[in-house]
Structure formats: structure tokens, C-alpha cells
Length: 118
Length: 108
Image 1 (cartoon, rainbow over the protein chains, first blue to last red):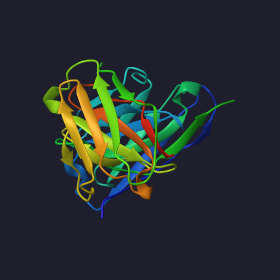
Image 2 (tube, rainbow over the protein chains, first blue to last red):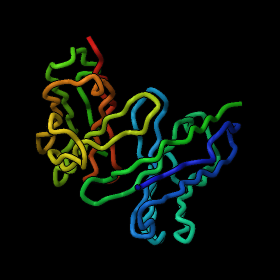
Image 3 (cartoon, chains in turn purple, orange):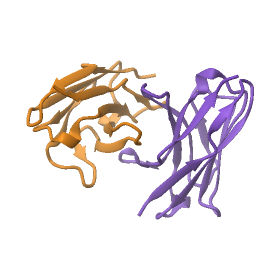
Image 4 (tube, rainbow over the protein chains, first blue to last red):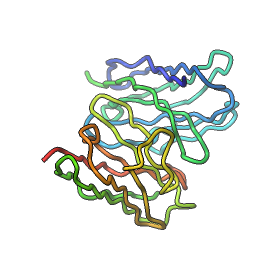
């Protein structure tokens, strides 16, 4: 069974940093691109970042470029999102998702809530 | 960036009724790479439809997708109690991926 489990969310002050993790199981993690997508509670979904299967290629939404860094450790089946210089606009639930060419994504984790507030 | 506009914002229907949800893109969606997701409160989105009209694994056939280019539709032929939720469309044909703002299907 495919599982994606995010962790690392929490309350952080504006200007602070946080690192999210997503542990994958039930599939060959190193074969798949992975994405981060976020959602302000009660609002729509916003794509944040993606990383290719071996970690050599990344892409970011303009709103996070230069502040967020996506990475992965295929030996640990884990995806990361390093978030720096956080602002209130980054407050959201962050989901990791598995990338699939034919459908974009298929499996999603349950999400981890990041709250940026003083 | 392709902007997706979903309508209506809220759809109030009774179980057994037909639901028709619309998603309009500001530019043509490459390869009709348009997906629909269902999301219930406190849960992650669940993939329903991809490629505008293909049902994902395990999705009941009361869910169907249609459309091409800039206009897409999700139809739920007969609403079951578990279908009342928020539905999102997403285009993955061009970067960055974008989502609509969602349509809430609520019990009338």
C-alpha cells in the first residue's frame, strides 16, 4: 500500500525556518518525481515545488523561489522541504504527492500544518 | 500561468440528483491534462479523473469527466451521501500546475 506521511509542521515566527519531511512507503520511491502542494485552510490548492526522481532537477512556484528548497534522500525514502524567511502568507497545510506522468499526481499524504505567526 | 475558474462556487443538491461542475481555463490545456479531485474536510484530495475523462483506479462510474481545450466538466450522475464534498480541478499540462478555487457540493 502506498503511503506518504508528512511531518515537521508547526508554529514558527515570521522570518523563521522550518523543514518538512515526507516519508514514503509501499512503492519504489527513487523511481518517482515528487511534489509539494499547499492549501490555506478553507481555500484552494497551490503547487509549491517538485523534484525529479534522482534529485538532480527541481522547480518552484514564484511565490517561494529563493526561500524554499526541495530535496530528497532516496536511501531513506524521504522527501524534504526546507522553508526559510517564512511569512504569514506561507501559513497552510503542506501535502506531499507522488508525481505520475499520465495524471500529474496520484497519491497524497495527509498533510502537515505550518502556521507562521508572532 | 493558466488560471482555472470553477463554477458554481457551491452546488446545493439532494442525494440521487445529478451534479454538473464546470472548470474553465484561461488558456488551452496542453494534451487535455486536466484532473479532478474530491476533498472532504480534514482529508487530502483524492484523484477522481485525469486526462479530462479517464477515471482513476477505484473510482465509481457515476463520476465522469468531459471536455477539451479550455472547457471541462465533471458530472456525478446520481449523488450518493458520500459524494458531498469539495471538488477541485487542476491542469498539469503546463508549468506551473494550477488549480481551480473549488466547488462545494452540499446537501440541499
